[in-house]
Image 1 (cartoon, rainbow, N blue to C red):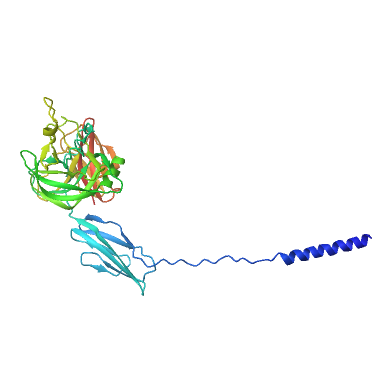
Image 2: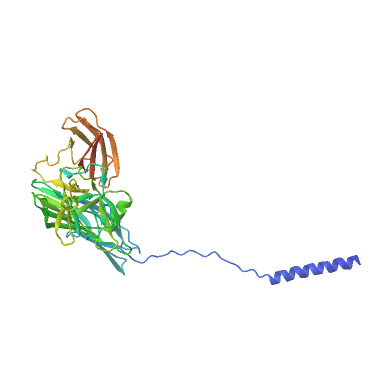
Length: 398
């Protein structure tokens, strides 16, 4: 009986095992092989610099997709190249459109960047006018109506400041300005006109427009949000040998707003701010906002022209307590005390947006040596800082 039971169990076990194998089908699953992804042919390129003074050396880098086999560059000045990554030298001032055409032997693709490279004249003796203004800066609100130096419900059209000069061969290359308010309506990005007017030397009243450039309102909004000064370089520098006014046309789209910082009234002896009203007439801030029987409303707006003097001109237009030699420079400069001034104790070197790169003490000796070899080529501002005042000048690093 025991033997019969054992045989029966063995038969059942074998039967179960056989049944299990016959019902559980094994399906092989292979790891998929990766095949390369081919991008379509598209011309893409960059440049290591897109603006600078002549002669300007630019290295172009091809970043095209689709495995091109041939390249043709046109640089906008009459020259071209068949190299993949050419180096080109722009000898003359102007704005240049760059085009890259590529081919893979069958298909072609071209990319053109309009006015991609900007080359301007290399100037010496550069500085800013009236920078910085005496602090604290402020702005004036009109109760329920907006701002004195910005948009308001009176429909003022423009804000500018008067700059007096009889200097010949003065070149205005742009301006630095400080905004206290900037607001952008949804869906809009106005181009704000930046203008230079000639001005009556005796009254300061703006006259004919000498030059116009633009800046995007979104740039001003970003600068205000990050507490940065706004830097504007003109596409075409403006020559003037007479007094002038500089400022902006105010935004016109509903919801767009800007307002300049200004000096507190009375901080400076003479009013320089002018306002173009809704009837297109210009009036000084002093005339418009001096209260009846009150003290004169005298302000200057935080607008600082960037100027350069051509060769052979008088370099005393902007007196400062220190001279910088050499300027332009590339490795070491000397800050020379030219007025026996002991009121300034430190210096700071910043870019045009206010970012500080170097800072140190001004020695008691005639000159202070500063190593600038870590600075990239460009235009910088050197501030001379004292207990009660600040002076500044421009440094060109080549």
